[in-house]
Image (cartoon, rainbow, N blue to C red; front, side):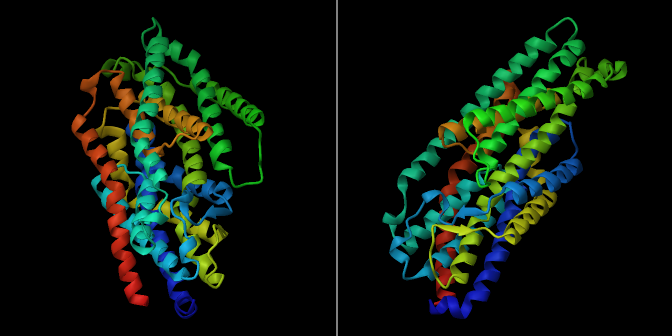
Length: 421
C-alpha cells in the first residue's frame, strides 16, 4: 500500500506510456489484419485504409468500446492471494503491457499476423506464474487458446472457400459474368450488412445498455442488411464495362463490381474491431489506474474512463499508419493473390466466423480467422495458389506467442519489483 501511495503518479504514467505502446502494437498488427484483404485486393489504398481505420476504429472504440472491462483479463488468473499486496498486481499489469507491446512490435516488423489477445494472455500468465504462483493460473483457459489455433483458421477458411466457390459458379462461370455480378451484388451486400451488424450487436455493443434478444439482434441485422443491399445495388449499377481493362484481364470489369462492397466492408470491420478489441487491449492500463486511484483496492471490475479509450484510439491509428503496412502485405498479397472478389470472400467469411463464435462460445482469434479465410480463398483455386512457406512462418509465430509473452513479462515483472521494492 505504501509503495502505491509514494509512487502512484509514476506508476500511472508508466501505465499510460506502456498502454500507448500496446495499442500502437494493436494498430500495427490486429488492425492491419482487418484491413489487409481490402488493401491487398486493390479495393482501397494503404492511405485510404489508414483514413478508414482512423475514423471507424476510433469511433468503435469510443462509442462502443465499453465503460467496464475485466481488469483480470478473461479470468486468466485469480488474484485472491495478493489482495494484501496490490503492488504485485500493478507490477504484473505493467510488465504484461510492456511484454505484449514489444512482441507485437517484433511481429509487426517481421510482418507476422499474431493475436493481440493471445499475446497479452501469455504475458499475464508469465507474470502470474512467477509473481503469484502456478496455482493462480486458470490452465483450462490456456487449453482453449491452444485449441483456437486449430479451430479459428479452419472455420474462417471453410466459409471463405464456400463463398469463393459460390461467386465463381454464380458469376464468373456464367455466360454474362458482368451482368451476373450486378444481379448478385445486392445479395452479397445484404450478407455483408447482415453479418457485420451481427458482429457489432453481439460483440461490439456488449458494454452498452442495449440488451437485445436474439430475435431483436436478428431484426436489426436484417434491416441493416436490407439497407446495404439497396446501397450496393445503387453503387454497382454505376459500374460500367471497361473494354480496355478486360483486354488485359478478362474479368477486370467484373472485379470492379466488388470494389464498392469491399470499401463498405472495410469500414464496418474497422468499427467492429474497434468496439470489441481495443478496450481489451487497454484493460491492464485501466487496472493499474483503478488500483492506484482506489488506494490499492483490487476489484475484478474497474471503470474504463473515456480518456483511456481515447488514448487507445489514438494509439491504434498511429500503429497502423507507421507499421501496419507490413502485416497488411502479408495478409493481402503474400499468402495468396487477392482480387476484390476474393478479398470480399475472405473478409465476409472472417466476419461470419466471429459471429458464430460469439454466439456459441468457441475460442477463436480474429487474427487467426482472417488468416484462415485468406488461405481458404487460395485453396479454392488449388494448393499451388498458396505460399506454404509464408503460411508455415505464420503458424510458428502463433505457437511462440504465448511463451515469448510469458518470458518477457516474467523478466519485466522482476525488473519492476526490484526498481520499486
